[in-house]
Image 1 (cartoon, rainbow, N blue to C red):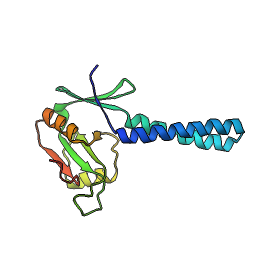
Image 2 (cartoon, rainbow, N blue to C red):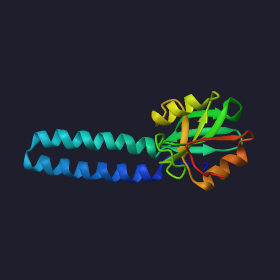
Image 3 (cartoon, rainbow, N blue to C red):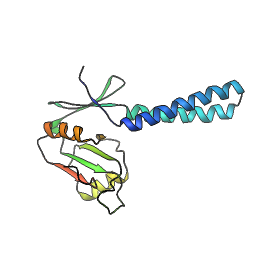
Image 4 (spheres, helix red, strand yellow):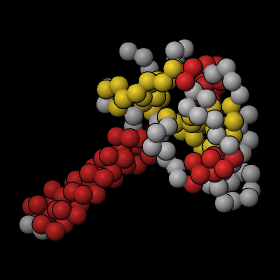
Length: 160
């Protein structure tokens, strides 16, 4: 089995802990007979469980392409030849200071983006039909090793 990178370890940890607490409170509400509380906290637990599943998905980078797996099931595979652009994007788009980038992500786009498209991408983060993972220098180095083209950046600060 190939080793991959979790999309966002921080979001996964926070959301799994939040859902665990919500389900614990749900169980307490069941014992107390508070059915409105049961529905409310169960809904919160389900929502944060879905966020945990999305953030805990794995991206596998190898010489053939990029693969996304969720709970050991292959969700999608994109060969490097279908990738038009790889970049690093910061999600804090309205701050003019270059050191205030917000969360940074590495994205893999099947079409070439211009500055307006990158702005819209950052504004509507996370993308629905694009593979991405949270930025670290190690992950960027791995992508640079496998990707032959340039790596674009938008509101990402000093990444190189």
